[in-house]
Length: 489
Ligand code: ADP
Ligand code: MG
Ligand code: ZN
Image 1 (cartoon, rainbow, N blue to C red):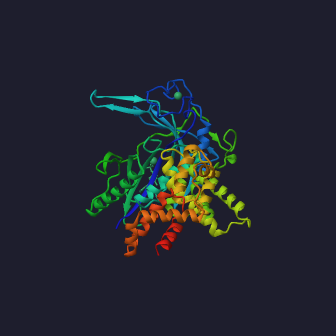
Image 2 (spheres, protein in one colour):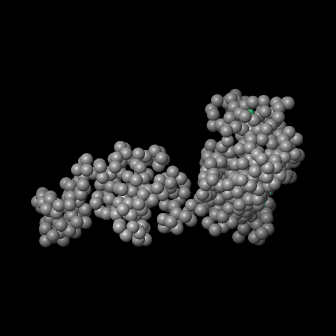
Image 3 (cartoon, protein in one colour):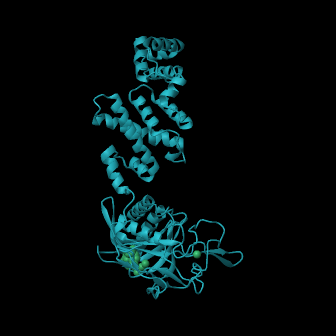
């Protein structure tokens, strides 16, 4: 068996007002080509770049979130190469003094070390027109701040690569430094893979580019592990090269050989001063994380609300609006119990039951109601949501009624007890009224009664259903069941 070794290089477009070295708006999604451009990002002679402080601070924030060292003095370097989407003939990047270095990210208890995080500028985009036999270039993207993160080769499988990239995307979104949408190229993952006989020995690495989904990352790595193993088993050598990913065939294909390292002739960017990160305007010592990171939140949600199931947890982790809403509802719900329970201290078991109710109504019924919208768009206040939960908890309404109420509340913003009153939906408490309604149902469904007497237990459920329909869910089904049995027996 061969041991796979994988390292990732991840480019992420930063969400800033303007581009990296000029004041053009940072908007890569605009359709019309070459409108967000200027002499600076086109590299016209005589122009000078100016460092975008916001972009530098964002990278430092990411470095902090990933436990990196933040450099004291950093600088930009010129990376020289020719390509038609690179207007200057060089890219301003960082070679020897990246902003951040030596960090790590733990994925399910496994540590992936981060080698470096640096800042550079994005390139333009080429469009190839097969019919016209020509290519067009759009420079709207040229000069957009691009953060590059490089890991140490600590990853061992396609699944781990996917999980790592996914967690990074979450962190970027939490920090609001990027939308990090892979399909739109805001986050681009390149994987380096090699295999060898021995743990710790590095084989010849192959780089795979153009992976635009997590699924592709995982598949490409797993495919490549198999391909390379096959080569070694046949006594041949793996070629050091760059490969692409064919989404349809689900296989990698050779793009270009990389026999010797390409010489970019890096040298310090003469048009930009070094960055003293302890001093204004950067003041790295003042940079603080503005938000709770996903892993912290998982731990807190587990401890505070007892959420154990991964599926549920990840819905909350991925959707921060929903998670905030959940927390507000929980705090309102616990307020309600204070009012209701004079002892004022909610017991642990009761709290757990209430939490389960809130989670279930949120993740099934509520998410079904809001569909593509976010929890921010609902008319249901957290207070009203909590009130509904208490009504269910105290068995004052059936779950069927609760679902209907939730829908109504979402549409009108109404208060649950008010809706109940207005629509005459309150639970039938008067047992005489309940009894006579049940008697009516029994008389109307004599066939089912006979079935039940003949031992068909399902007939009872059928009758309960009829009672619920007749009362529009205004009776507790368990009580109805007991009453039906009593009457028939
Ligand atoms: P290069 O200079 O060729 O870009 P780097 O040292 O910068 O190489 O590493 C690029 C990426 O490749 C990193 O993520 C690193 O972890 C990974 N890597 C380096 N060597 C190997 C290897 N033998 N097998 C797999 N990944 C590797
Ligand atoms: Mg590299
Ligand atoms: Zn510009």
